Image 1: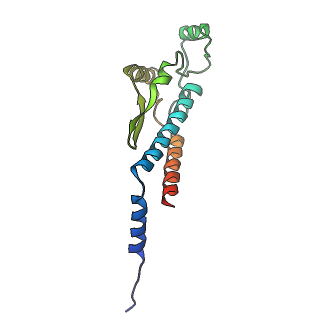
Image 2: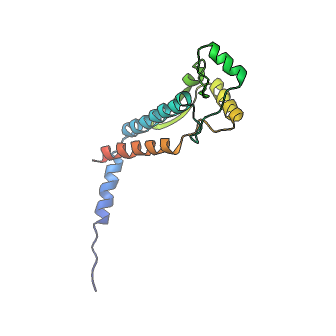
Image 3: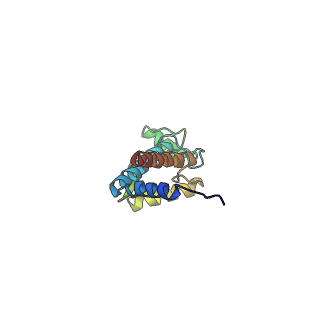
Length: 148
């Protein structure tokens, strides 16, 4: 009868040792980098490009609000949710110890973002597939560096 030999136990053991080398500090760096990257991409998409999570424009300003924006030197071609900068500055990376997430640091940001999503009938502050793909590449790259 033929015999079968495998190095699976050794390979799994070596991989296990490498994964255990991912220290809390290294995981914190990887997850924080991912969160900060997502924050930057999302801020650019919403407050610069004026796009919702589905890639479409957020909407159009009412005529009255467009006049107000113009009187303050703001653009009116697209909804970019940027008037005073308060909402933009309220959208931050929260958390610690490799448990990071994006959110609003105050009730103001939470309420204004929810009202805008309701008004324009669009999800605005969720990540897009492209943004999630970038995050996955950051995790994969960070883990590969540590496992070398």
